[in-house]
Length: 415
Ligand code: ZN
Image 1: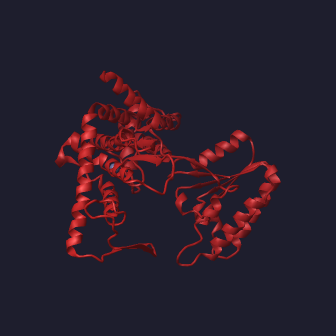
Image 2: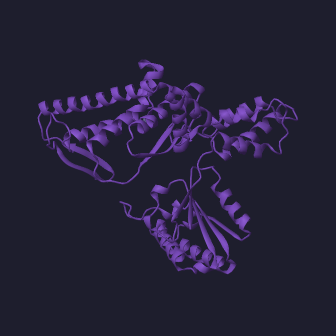
Image 3: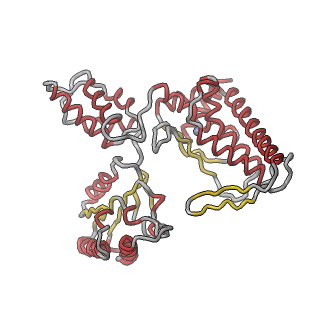
């Protein structure tokens, strides 16, 4: 089995259908919510029926959309849902039970992989993940081309410009947009769709109508976000934090305007002070880049999560890990950070106001030093930062290889 993971509207169902089409085999498709019934036992028997039909038709593909509706983690704190649990157990049993030589492929789709029951993700079940992400500039252009194929458009239409303006939209939004533009043209008594119709429809799809968590960014915002993300990633590279830079992107998703994904090259439980300092510096890189490029009073609110992370790390360095010379190798505060019923009751103080003040000033010292260093690193490499931000604005996503190539290019042009 394989799990297609991605936000709604990115074409997970289409992809599954296309796989079945290419393979030339029967395609069984059901949504997770179809299994969840009022009556206990109905869902489980539907799963049984589905697999029986599939066995008969094998080789074939079974597609279960919104698998999170049945596959939600069972260790829920407030008691489970019997019906869903039975259905899930039946699904697990069927997946383990069927004859693997028969050629049944199971595809599941979800936009919330983190809530899935671990048992579903074990080897032999949904052990492969395929990320179906929001389309980048090129992806949007190609999607627009497909959907506009059968719509008559006049010579003002510029799909390139439209693709550029629609960062954050998914395939179904784009299809919807072209449809709305066609309606718009008809209303105005025209036979052909023009660029103005498309932009009008774009506003309808992106802003009005259904509420959008990921709003579309203005040109200025895109620039700020590009510098912010490059600030993180460039410091990560310059400090050689032994992180692997997975991807830098300014395609908005899930409320965040951009992302810099890194993952440690090897997973270590023991983290050195040096690494933590590097991590804080990198987290401050986004804010530092904004300040360098736009000045202190122009920095946006985009760094609030970064600053939260930085504060948490600095606090732990001082109060739990004994990494401040001034405060000594001592733990302050009862360190049982209870996570109880999902709520973090946090730290309990068992020290004086005086100590609390010292802890705060030590944290501030660490963060200030890191911030100054972040600014220095970026200022010293301003040419690199500019080149990277420009490329990111143009391509919206850079992977590690592309990122390093740009760094190399700038380096060699310095000589
Ligand atoms: Zn950031």
